[in-house]
Amino acid sequence: MDARLVTLLLLAAAASAPLASPQLDSAFYKTTCPDAEKVIFDVVQNRFKQDPGTAAGLLRLVFHDCFANGCDASILIDPLSNQASEKEAGPNISVRGYDVIEEIKTELEKKCPGVVSCADIVAASARDAVKLTGGPAYEVPMGRRDSLTSNREDADALPGPDIAVPKLIDEFSKQGFSLEEMIAMLAGGHSIGICRCFFIETDAAPIDPEYRKNISAACDGKDSGTVPMDSVSPNVFDGTYFALALAKKMPLTIDRLVGMDPKTEPVLKAMEAKPADFVPLFAKSMEKLSVLKVLTGKDGEIRKTCSEFNNPQASSDTSVIRISSLNPDQMGLSQPGAAKPAVAEARKVAPGGEEEATKRIRNAVKLTKTFVNEAAAKVEGGVVVNKAAQIQTPKPNV
Ligand code: HEM
Ligand SMILES: *[C@@H]1O[C@H](CO)[C@@H](O)[C@H](O)[C@H]1NC(C)=O
Ligand SMILES: *[C@@H]1O[C@H](CO)[C@@H](O)[C@H](O)[C@H]1NC(C)=O
Image 1: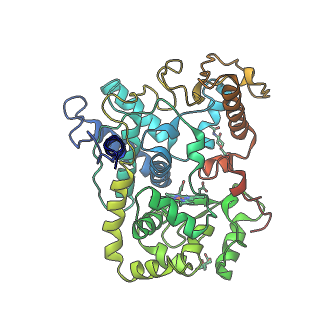
Image 2 (image 1 turned 180 degrees about the vertical axis):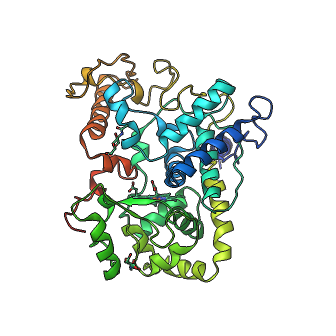
Image 3 (image 1 turned 90 degrees about the horizontal axis):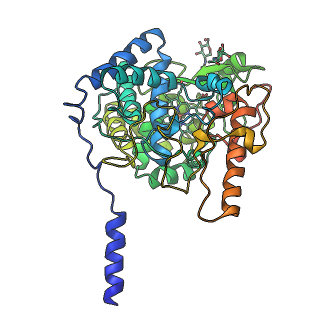
């Protein structure tokens, strides 16, 4: 082989070699903000006491933040932060837990301004949430930095609730998770929290008739209604998932499908038979999830407010629309509720020139419209944002 080619290949290999959680450290804030993790835990615990659903919101948040484009708090960027009316809707159109993150951030900014990243808050608060629901403790080293960009198209890459099982396995495998790790995370994640009726498709996969009747009672004519993910122990982290998924007594299609698929069914059965093995596997998988593609060192920034970039105008990265600074007025969006004109017009014109820029703006308009016009439930579901193909028409009767 040509020597230059070998060198090139070696360089390419070095560039793409994954660094195992570079520069993350469990003592990261020891000198700069020694109480950081205590502050995080205290807020999570307080909110959990008021509403145990807080834990589910935070657990789901870390999955959504980390899985698509890395644990960098990009999920927290408010696409419409220039508009008061839409900002109000923030907590509602997002995954639950958003406001808990902001509360923690506010506390931390009082104690040690500009030090603790939103990405670390997302990862640590999910760990605390798991603990509070009775789940295992796991290690979450600190030192993540917050993204300078938020690309909704990455978030769209998250699997939807009716994804086929082989595709699901594939998506998790691409992120470095084994089949067992995937099932452990799904089982732990969906052993707490709620599922909006909007996401329930009773016809897409077999369902237990009595269970179907039960959820019909809760969901009839109410897309915004909710049912517990785990109807046996809704707020407790445990292994009930296996029996429920195998018996087709789960609201989400995906959970009933993994209970039947020839690849996943045996895994569920094995885990059901040895629940003691599932818990540490869940913990290990969460450790992996919490360090996926993190930004460290001088990359990214430490946001002052988790829902906004520090400086929406400054960026050397021309490849991504700065969603937080989009100006819907200038994009031909007229919204009845949009009282204030947007302030900053900070989108970047791409090096690709006018055409590229126009395309990006069109995408951005599309996603802004999605946020404004489509059912909040769709957006709240997160996993299906903007993915028309995966969004099921709500069924009048479940
Ligand atoms: C790719 C597989 C997954 C899909 C398709 C999926 C989909 C969903 C959907 C549609 C909901 C209902 C949301 C709502 O009604 O607002 C939900 C809830 C939830 N998911 Fe998943 N999920 C997946 C994997 C996971 C993983 C790996 C975790 C965590 C480790 C997780 C944790 C949760 C939690 C805790 C909730 C309840 C949220 C709440 O109560 O607010 N999910 N998921
Ligand atoms: C969110 O929705 C609930 C129920 O629809 C409503 O009561 C609440 O005021 C909304 N919150 C915000 C901040 O818009
Ligand atoms: C249906 O609801 C009833 C009453 O809450 C409960 O006893 C029963 O176990 C539920 N059945 C299923 C299959 O979830």
